[in-house]
View 1 (spheres, rainbow, N blue to C red):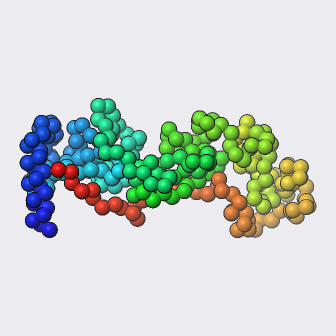
View 2 (tube, rainbow, N blue to C red):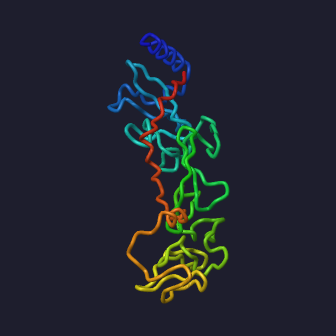
View 3 (cartoon, rainbow, N blue to C red):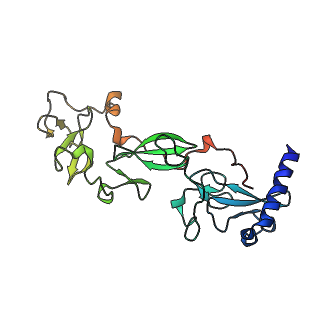
Length: 248
């Protein structure tokens, strides 16, 4: 294995001699971090290995951010900072899988404004925005509906942009739509939400008796998809990818 690595280092060194661009790259072996970004391509970087400068690729969809930075291997999402500003470009083409434009990234859902996909090594995980928020493709995060182009009205408020909507089987909580944007509300003490009149009334109703302080039944939580917790974009420590093959 050691001989193979030394041979790869030697080949990369010979290739670098023949490329005029290599002379423009800072020698990582002369830096404290021993890792530097490529001068032209933001998804490549150079690392000092046994005294030789070897070029590596960031995982597909990520760009070089610096040693000990980013989500993995010193690489991060392109939109996080100025890691990939002009004239630098991403040279490696996207590798797409189901729901993922790149192997790594955060992408909007194909049919829902309240959902999105987090992709890690080509595996897509469906995520849900909470509290009446919608996925903002430009910010790559959940945002207020008024800031999301193309999804101005939340699905919960399709029937009445200024009406009330039941929340699962809850007896004292409900959604209040304000201009098409839902806001979670709670009935005043000792009142319950009536599903027929869509307002808080004195109990009992057909579905609710006098309110209690007991926890909501499990099925109520199952019917509240927009209230599920959004997973932070950087929670991927359980699936660290291996280093990409050196590019000679």
